[in-house]
Image (cartoon, rainbow, N blue to C red; front, side, top):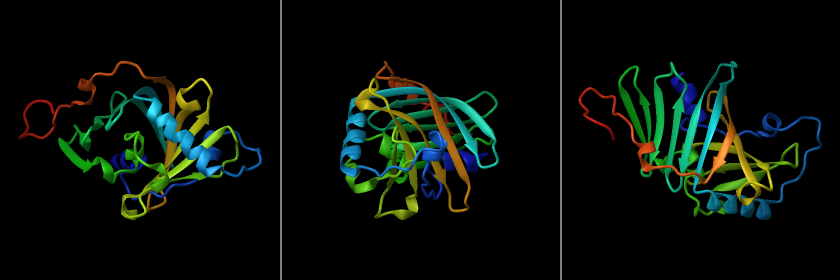
Length: 217
């Protein structure tokens, strides 16, 4: 379970895969990307979205699925709260990304920049340095593979956007697909996306599970 959660969030040694077949209908001819225009569109979307909330479903290669809610606040903050019965939490507080496992009272921490998920958290990051547009089977879907070429050990992640005129910047984040070094694929799908709603910083605090710790972080 823990390995699946880490892979889904891009915290394993992930290798991006083309996600168009997962997020779009099949049977449509593959289309060539428009790198400059599409990257500019993604950048405009990132800058237009200050907050986002969504429900998510996470599915591993064996078909096991768990759900929960995601809260994002740019720059630097995100929270993945899993469904009842899953005693884990993932939170980025603006500086660090935390994986909290309450069932064993453990906390793991990474600098935000060490995760490919960081591409979602910094609206001013130059995507031309870390991302590329991927071919897709459906022109309605825009795929972005993000990785830091200077730090390949941080892995990569493929983000899937739907071209939606009513969404900020004309794009709606649909989810992502990650593939780790052991060929374990995990898919995260989003639904009920809401943009630029009020989100307080308290959403990114959490109770430290370690026995020696006291109070929330």
